[in-house]
Image 1 (cartoon, helix red, strand yellow):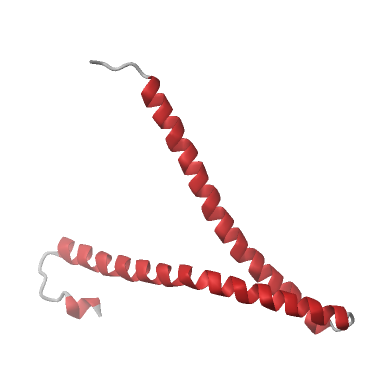
Image 2 (cartoon, helix red, strand yellow):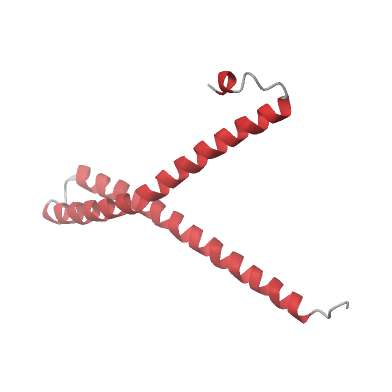
Length: 111
């Protein structure tokens, strides 16, 4: 696909950069779609867990319901960890930036 699109480009460095740009654009588009899908999926999984818990209380000996409940909970936990990981990384980055700012502010000016 990219080979035909940039066939007229003679410089290999430019051709490589153009292909990298195309791939980066596709990756960003895919990531945005994936992030938009998470909240909807999370709500559906919460509803499914609640439904499965109610069904498991009515039929405590049904292994299929218990297994499905366990799988759904693990999938929901994975999504929650992804959200938490992103938030904790951002908080860590902010703390580091704040420390650097304070260090810069406390250093004497050479002028």
